[in-house]
Length: 291
Image (tube, rainbow, N blue to C red; front, side):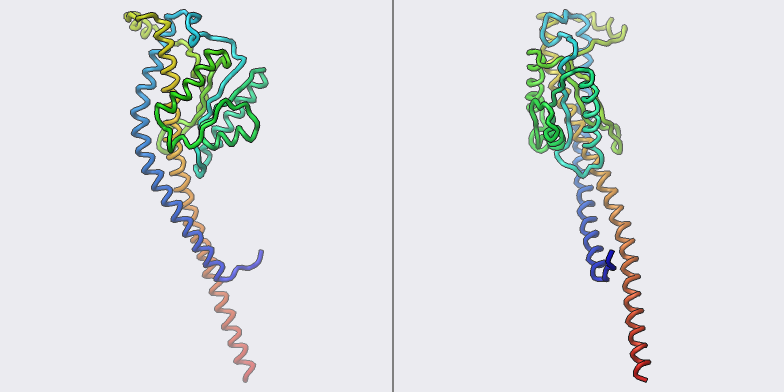
C-alpha cells in the first residue's frame, strides 16, 4: 500500500467526520421514530392478544367442517407471509428474517410441501424474487404509506381467500418482534388455521356465553378479523424492532467512526512529525554542505 501524504490523511479524517455526523443524525431520527412506534405497539398488543384468545377458545365449540375458514387440512400447500424492512443499515435485522424463512421453506420442501411466499418489505421482495420463489403478491414501501388496518385487511383478504379456495392449507407468519428497546427476536409461527388450545378454567368461563346467529358464522367472521389484525400487529412489531435495530446500528457506527478518527489523527500527527523531521534533516545537510 502506497504511503499516504498528510493531505490525504487529513482528507480521510474529514470524510470519516462527515460520515459520523450522518450516522449520529440517523440515530437521532430512529430514536424519535422508535418512541412513536412503541406507543402504537403498546396500544396494539392487548387487543391483538385478546382477539386471538377469544377466537381460539370459541374454536372448541364449533363444527370445524361447517365453515370453510374453520376447516383443518393436511399441510400440502403452505403460504409464508414474510415481513422485513424496506431499507438496510439496521444490522442483521433483515438477514435474520430471510435466513430463518429460507431454512424453514427448505425444510418444508424436503417434506414434499409446496411453498408460496407473500413478501412485505423491499428487502424480502428482492430476496425471494432473485431466487425465483413462487410469489403470491409483493408489497414495498409499506411503512411509509400503508402501515394501517386498510393495508393489513387487504393482505388478510388475499390469504383468507386462498385458504377458502383451498390454494393453501396453512399460513405462517415470519417477522421480527420487539422484546426490549435493545433486543428483538425473529418469530416463525403458524397463525392460521386456528388450533384450539385452552385451559379448563377458561373453558368453564366461556361456557356461560350464548352465541348468535351461529357459532360457526361468528367464528368464521372472527377468523377473518383475526387474520387482518395479526398481520397489522406483525407490521407494527417489525416497524418498532426496525427503528430500535437501526438506532443501535447507527450508534455503533458513530462510536466506530470516533475510534477511526482517533486512529487516523495519530497517523496524521506521526506523518506530520516525520515530514518536519525530514525537512530539518535536509536543512541541516544543506547547511553542512555550504561550510
